[in-house]
Amino acid sequence: MRWVAIASAVAAITGYVVILIATTTLGAERFELFNVFWGLFFTLNGIVMGLMHETTRGVRAMARPDDETWERERSHGQDDEAVLEAFEAEELEDASVSAEARAADLALARASNASGINPVKTSVTISLVIGALVLTTSPLWAPALLPAQYGATATGLLTVAITLTTVQAVFSGVLSGIGRWRAYAILTMIESFGRVIVALIATLLSDPVTGFLVATVTGMISSPIIMLTPAGRRALSAHTDVSLRSFLSRGGQSMLAASAAAVLVVGFPVLIKATRPGTDPVLLSNLLLAVTLTRAPILTPITSFQSAIVVYFVDRFRQGRRVLLIPIAAVLGIAIVGAGLAWLVGPPIIELMGRGFTVGGHVLAALTFVAGVTGCLYLSGAAVLARERHGVYVAGWWTATIVAIVVLLVTPGVLDAVVLALGLGPFLGVLVHLIFGMGPVTPDNETAPEPSTEPEREAAEHAR
Image (cartoon, rainbow, N blue to C red; front, side, top):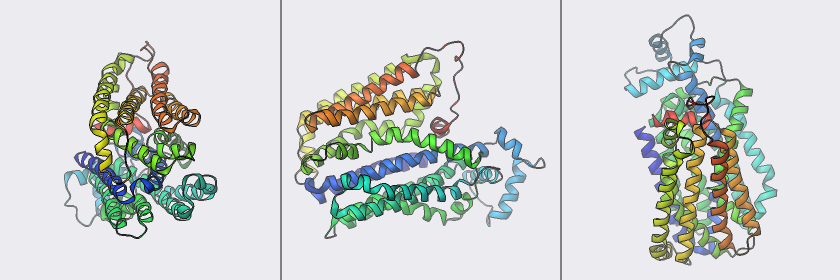
């Protein structure tokens, strides 16, 4: 898991490096063009990550040595060593592999013998459908979100990128399911560094906006690179434990759950652009940058350790709502301290980001505090997932998103609207989680659930 932790840190850092390069190159006049496209792509990317969760679950179900489904799939009483030797004889030229690689190959040997679907092959068809949906619906959303001079380029890039990213999400799920953590981490780092390299090249172009649009989607090249390696090619043979119909159903539910957080968090620039179409570009650029920077200190650690947070709540299942008191108090305390610091030192930092950027300290303080409220929504969502209340988890996040959209539409003044949307929406989402998903333990539910499905099973596996 060390590799995953390193890759997560690299992805977070390089993401902000790209934003810094964009602000200094584009200035406040054009930054919103890039940032809205960035938010749109990563919203779609976050949604298709639901397929990664289901693929991880399905492949891992066949790869675990104690899995009952695997026991039914084992043929002629072969033990694990015999299965692995047969697999190595057919697939590996050099059986001299590390312990981690050997364990991954054993997991892959089991998953390759499963009777379920091959998720990577299936993802090709799914990706084409998703790409076609993006392209055919673009006349409905592109004119409102993308400037006319970049509309065709941005739509084309987004269509190709989400098509390839869907396959990449499933392939990442396979790597996670069989325990190929090094390959998974390398895939992530190729994507991250590739984005930075293209962003640096964009600064030299006569039209840097196009270069930054390309940089946003550059990560789609990472999976083909990993697939060409011996370990990547072998991973393509993995199967899940379910039929095509079940995979599509489970994957759809997981995508719905993933979309709940993706739309409100990474997709917030898109929400502002869609609901406040007449906003001055310079003001919008300043707001988007301020939201991005004030969220980072609070949300990046919480999202990076979401797996461990789910397990923390599973271990304290019987404490009911009390389990959230200390974590929420800690996050809000950090948000209050951060708000004070943002008021004092935030404005000069914003001005260093590039020409035309200036945001008042009171605005930065307010945005920092409401970022803490969003952090509390992540915590309450993790606690609800730990109780296997998937419907309540999704309801809480969509409540926050819908309320935020309504606030953006009806509140006069874009500054007030943004702060209120990011505060009231997540607050009501937390209430939904607390009221409907964190009731007291009764004799019927006093046994703590095992993390067993989509987001939480993956979380438990990662945390271990």
